[in-house]
Image (tube, rainbow, N blue to C red; front, side, top):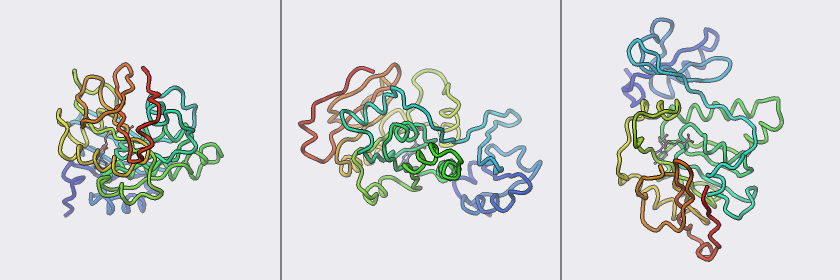
Length: 271
Ligand SMILES: C[S@@+](CC[C@H](N)C(=O)[O-])C[C@H]1O[C@@H](n2cnc3c(N)ncnc32)[C@H](O)[C@@H]1O
């Protein structure tokens, strides 16, 4: 009987009939059971393996709450504030960024779309499996643009406090987006609602773990660490050298380990 965190949360794997082998492999990786037909109907979380890739459905008793899936799609990076906070005055193509809290990969995708090389680290095995599946599908795609995007990305599963020091080449920038409780009401976006349902409600205060992650990140990023926070949330750690503010989100920038960065002009502006 499996006793991983994923199985304690009630995850099962289900599949199209001809994706049985993939389902069994995923179940073994995640330490959860495979459930066919009715067996998956009552599970709080089901990872579905189909020919179109992986997705997760979640439910509360009889009530289906939603489906999430990670897709890499090409598109213009636009004026995404995370891209501006990470890049500053530098050329995107010269930057290697580690997204050390990758989640469902939205920020990692925005950075890769802007032309940066992105290493996405995610601690949770289920989320890492979804990210790897999206990257795999993109690498197999017929469109050269999508394959090109995928070639700039990779996924590592594990705790970033340990993995950050092992990433090669060492990152120019590390991005952190620790979970934070919504300041009012429940999570509106489906992805955020899923992360809260799957990972649990985060704490209001920066935890020792998050502070340790920020410290490790500052020790390895040569250029800067960017921490994404809700607009009114307290800083994760003291020492912010500038912030970029959006309508609901703030990007706090901490200088990286290269001394030269301390003299780089502050190009942050209001989003
Ligand atoms: C708010 S979510 C990030 C959402 C992400 N920015 C996106 O665009 O989808 C935070 C994620 O960080 C992950 N995480 C937290 N601490 C971590 C650590 N020490 N190492 C790796 N991942 C971590 C959590 O599992 C969670 O998936």
